[in-house]
Length: 358
Ligand code: P6P
Image 1 (cartoon, rainbow, N blue to C red):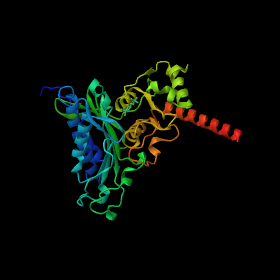
Image 2: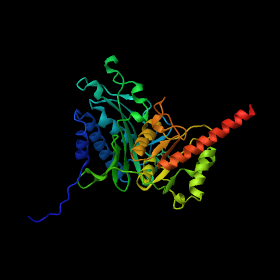
Image 3: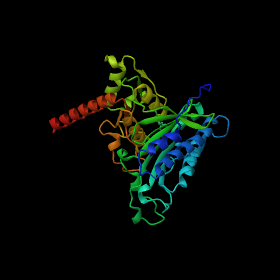
Image 4: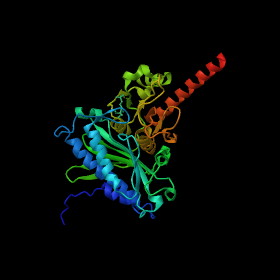
């Protein structure tokens, strides 16, 4: 028989099914959730890819809870994500960067109580770049709903506590990057895997299995225009990697897109570190913990990297508010730990000075 040269491939669908077989008692509830993310992202990508052609560019003329002007695509992507998950019996609730409050979803008694999940997402991260055709992304985080459903009233399918869980408890985390191609990158705690959407067949094809951040720091990603707002250890770290004489940093480049997903994705594949330090005056970071930093932190650690505020591992933070913001440095473990060391030395020196003065 002549060889047709056909090469088989792994799709998101077959990969999810294979992962499900690792959990013999699984009822496929979680797998369905991951499949739905694939569907939602295909709908969003169809809108993003046509952004220049149909009336979805520009501002919606509204503001979100963050006080940010919403792009039309922000609102559209948010509606698509909510519509995708709203009907799923396994979803107890949703939370979005674009919605002030959590979005309870009526729980169906047909699914066992311990098979309920909540999903948090930034539907279109980096959307201010849309009009310039710069890569944007959807970031998602999935937790088990922990509230005791037996104690809840029927119209109270979830409580805020279901969402305010530390990042190390995430069941899954990932993002979709809408760039030169559309890629879905996710982890369920068993490595980081990337799937590239083949527009000809409308399927996500496994293209990057078991992604590991290369042990080289090729990129330094930060909004360096904010340098004077940073505290001393942040400036020290930025100067050390950009201008220092250590061999490891002699080929380092500054790369900053201003789209968290795109900056992280490049550093994940090439090696590098992204930082958005706190504004020294306010002590506040910009990026949101629950649906930006925590999912990206889970991916970073699963790929051999690390994510920290400089004083605390991102995945250990106990959230206190749905939309709380944190400072973050994420990427190569070596660089994140170097930054943490600089912060610790700085804090110790400050404490010593205070003690000496008193
Ligand atoms: P700045 C986009 O608005 C975003 O939330 C992230 O995607 C991105 O990393 C950051 O803000 C960029 O912020 O202040 O550098 O424009």
